[in-house]
Image (tube, rainbow, N blue to C red):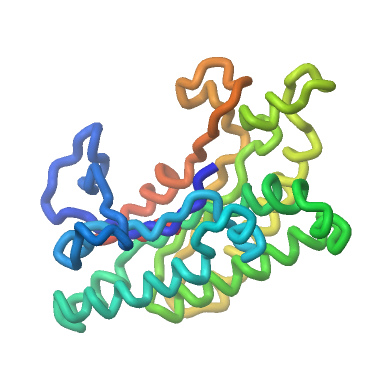
Length: 250
């Protein structure tokens, strides 16, 4: 599953088409791509790093950009946007942005269940709580940076992801029920976090985007029982907030 931090800026007055729903860019430039600059990023930018997670140990497993570093890039981007648009206009854009996050799957599948040291250090429930704490610190930092509209993405049916089913030989390549149970429990805790922080932080309008219950066939992937990646609904759920000017995806 792809774990990302992306900023997508809405094109003012652009048409709503199938390839560009809600008037957003079809292709989002990468922040670290030297062929782009702030003029490109002013209408969309991605800080994405595939296979990262809340836990820095997860990003270390596959040597990808950790979430805290993506947040640092986002803060630097804000400074560049202020220099490009002017501080007042840039801050207005940022405050009306929709910040979208989607991470956590690899923390369990590529870290907790894959690395013996993690499973011996934490129970699964303790690890869930550990990750929720990081998620809370992350969204709190977004609010500190000026974000107000946030979509916090949950976990999909991890046990029904093609790779997990492919590896479940003894179970007849069916879904791994224990993984799905963990995903549901973790999502419940994230949802509670959303409710708590909306009450705690002034102006915060955070929603929980829940991809749980969707299977590969729901996305035209056929049977979905062979290797591949399951995409979740975080984008379409988050867009329902209809942010006025900007979308940030994490």
